[in-house]
Image (cartoon, rainbow, N blue to C red; front, side):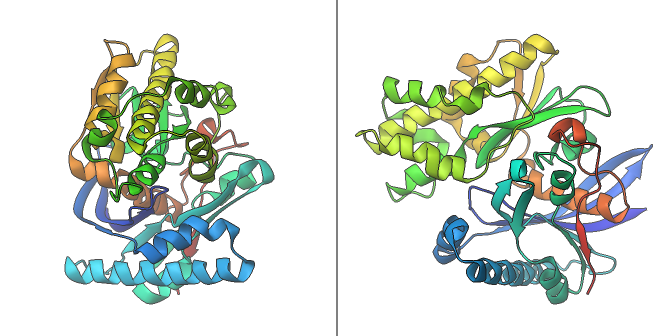
Amino acid sequence: MRYNTIGIMSGSSLDGIDIVNVEFYHEIKEWKQVIIESDCYPYSKEWEERLSNLHKATAFEYQLAHHELGKYIGECVNDFITKYKISKKELLIGSHGHTIFHEPTKGFTSQIGCGATISAITNCTTITDLRIADVAMGGQGAPIVPIGEQILWPGYTMYLNIGGIANISVPINKKEIIAYDICAANRVLNLLSNKLNQPFDKDGLIARNGVINKELLKQLNDVPYYQQSYPKTLNNNFGTEFILTIINSYNISTEDALHTYTEHIAIQVANVINNHQQKNIINKVLCTGGGALNVYLLERMRNYIYEDIKIEIPGKSIIAYKEAIIMAFIGLLRVLNKTNVLSSVTGSKRNTSNGCIWNV
């Protein structure tokens, strides 16, 4: 049987709403996927500022944004469906929404973008709230992509995603995966680039022309999070408030700040990869996320990573839309009442089937 799905992802880098139409099917008892169409709907400056500051809003403002983002996502999906002539017959939508609060130690996580509203606007079954059951079972609620990585792109010994936050997953066997957040990444680089009126540092060219501030680099590398054992996760505010506060306390140019933080990401990612290489056989790493297109960052990472480790960069559709593809897959697994978040990744009491199913 073939399943017609749409996956939606709004990441911490706030570059927009990623939408992908994917067909999933079984072949020799393995899941396969075909990417039909994909697109990104950029956030307006108003939405970007609103989402960046929503964690400080009133309860009314938060709930209003939850509804209005759901409305906007639904409208984007309808436009996507019309633009690419996608059939709505038995179409499933898996929407991650946008994370505002992620506090698993306090027992909750919150992604806005009302599923009922999306379903009502699109007239399609919609699955949202893809992390909350795991958190309710004592897990970190993140990362949730490893189950999709292992099933849909088998054959790698590690999966590295460099998005707003950099994270890794390492398959131990078919039922167990180790995964966790490494450090804040593109969200910090993008905010620094904004100071130079650039949306992001294309190819790392601005960073390349800067100079490392050794004192800042040491302070960043000494942040206690990096010494914590996994499972562990980061919320968006770690980069946008905690890390940026440290960077902004130094009287240095934006170019030097970008160079220093790029080096910091490279060091932290390499430390994680090299540490797992010592424990497991890590020789083939699939690297995705916007950071996979940052030429200078990849150069600096390779400078620190053991020589026998191969970093593989897939095609641009996988780089840009891997997480949206996996959100569609997680939504499908929920409808099929199958496990879609693994306890070995999040530390929860058991594997869970996450997601609220809206069919209005």
